[in-house]
Amino acid sequence: MTLSSLIVTLVVGGIVGWIAGLIMKTRAQMGILANIAVGIVGSVVGSWLFGALGLVAYGASGRFVMSVVGAAVLIWILKSLGVLK
Image (cartoon, rainbow, N blue to C red; front, top):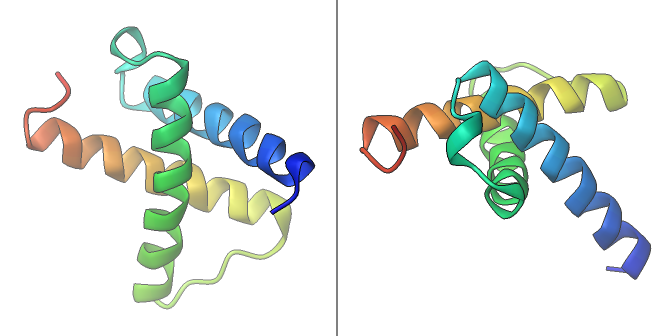
């Protein structure tokens, strides 16, 4: 992984986590590092979830939406476990 791809991953992960936090109303509890972690892990969750449902995300915007959905699902799971309020 090159430095530029790492930077893009961190920035996009932060944006995805921030949007998912807004959707799930956890914005006040999550800082930038949590947003990045939720965004990156949420992208993996979204990819797995879409694949399990037989859905395919086409293009950058489709993958972005898939990542936001995955991050929102991850936040929902964390809320259910009591990690987030």
